[in-house]
Length: 358
Image 1 (cartoon, rainbow, N blue to C red):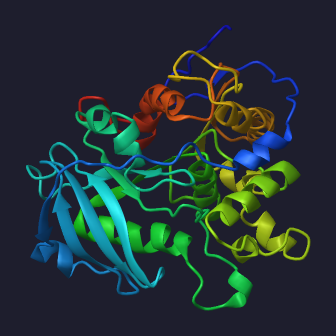
Image 2 (image 1 turned 45 degrees about the horizontal axis):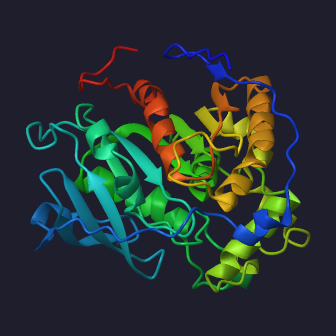
Image 3 (image 1 turned 135 degrees about the horizontal axis):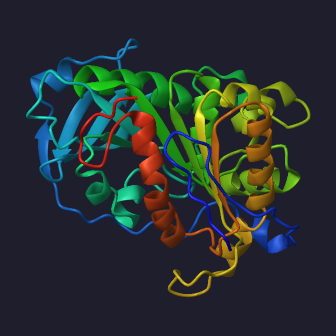
């Protein structure tokens, strides 16, 4: 396959037009998400939040109640969230010069997990801490739920519904700005279900995020196969799938309002990075996983279609499609490295932490 890498600031493409894939019943039996997460045994030093952190409040009263220092620059936070009606975990990697430059604000990257996983997944499965080390980017990895789908749930109109979107895009953003000096340069990236979240947040909050990256993400929830996979993912976690957005036929407006492929014009205002593989083994997985292969196969055609629609709408989009690979962490880790220069450029940062003149 011929590859053409994008120069910074331009629309890149490394694609071939995808062919049709045979989708079997095994896809939906597997449902969304890679294999369940292993425990993150990283030791920590529990501590109560310092005065500067506990003083910070989101507009609705959300606050940081507890901090665990995992190392010099990585922290686990407990956020008391009115939106979620409880405590939520968030992992943060501080910029290299965060302590040395107390008056400076820093660009921020939000990394969103996939289904059946948790907020530790990016540090458990990738080298994001090492990758981000010289760049002076604040990296924020919030809990997204095993089947949260990055939405304020419809939940039959109940006021107690989980409000994941409010937690991530309002409460957490305000706390990062008020306690950790996050600046106005923001990026999002996620994998699988988190890719859906990254694209939806960028489309539903135009102008708030300069970059949205989707790695093997769900980009069209009107696809009946994806609707069935979403439903099975919820059922696997003992969640009524109708709580998310209602029924596709009866609550069509709600479904469309959470479907990246129905929000192309709004999404075109953000630099979008789209990755999906063929589903064929690419040599990185320790052993062949038929479920991971089948999960990846139907994503390429919808991802390609969205990329083309974004280009027609005048958006800046980078496509990385048609490489061998399955719906699994070895390929997402590789793609994180491929995507990283684009993230830094969008944030106005560089590999050595200096600010780029744009």
